[in-house]
Image: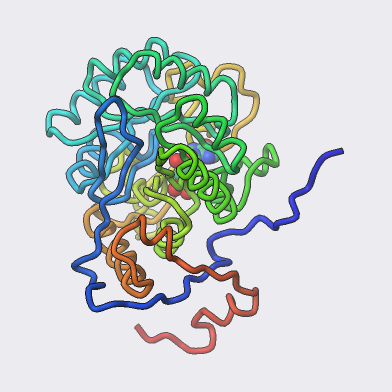
Length: 359
Ligand code: IMP
């Protein structure tokens, strides 16, 4: 008989963080947002100055986005739904600024793709799959590990401890969490697969910490997708994420490859899923072969201007919460954050529906 988890699947909005003791040394200018992208790989540590990565998506990460995020101290992962030579050319172009750059790969043509990406100077690879708990993915990880490269492999996406252990045993250097629904993603509607991002992160983070205790090896976790409010970033970091991957947030910015359009007087950007009909039509890759249905849609989202101010705003909020939590860095945040589930009534009470907002 199928098993049913006793724990309900929870989303970010169902949690709050309790304040911790703020000491005098906890100030927004002393908080470190430095983070580890992946575990140390053949002597190389890749650290990010800010915990942000742009998604492996046509509408999100081209050359301009990757260069901008790299300059801000994060990393962009160039989309892989294009011909290998075109992707390698983009990676090379980003490297002319001498910033970090990542690239997506798939489980079909990686034997050819990774070599060209290495030649182009890629710093990190990310296996781009909606469900990473698969032997195909383990094969791809194993192939890359056998090359003795110092380029780390981010594996995923997963939502539970079983899958974490499977990918880490296969050799993953970092793991991406999130089989989400909403925004451009229709995976749940098509396949009934997924898990609330909060439950997924908490479960995988517990497995990561247990693995660290047992092996002394710390595997960084990324929270991928589904963040619709700024505070979702903070919650993900409190729940154990080391960095955050975003699609919509960056697609809405000037630096994304998506076109800007005026709709009813408002500036909008196009944003389409990597498993949408549009991505398939534009994409030039084996990854879509044989797919009979889509798991994503094509949409319009409000344009938000350049990446810099958007990140500054979110980071100011992350720092403020970390000050309130009495922590100085993400490792302390993971260890000391105290979260509470809230009731539906308490969630409704948290809005401004009882007043008429004037500004
Ligand atoms: P967002 O930040 O909520 O917009 O989510 C971005 C993430 O959604 C990406 O990093 C992918 O993991 C995932 N994704 C991208 N395209 C699709 C799709 O077409 N269907 C389902 N998930 C997708």
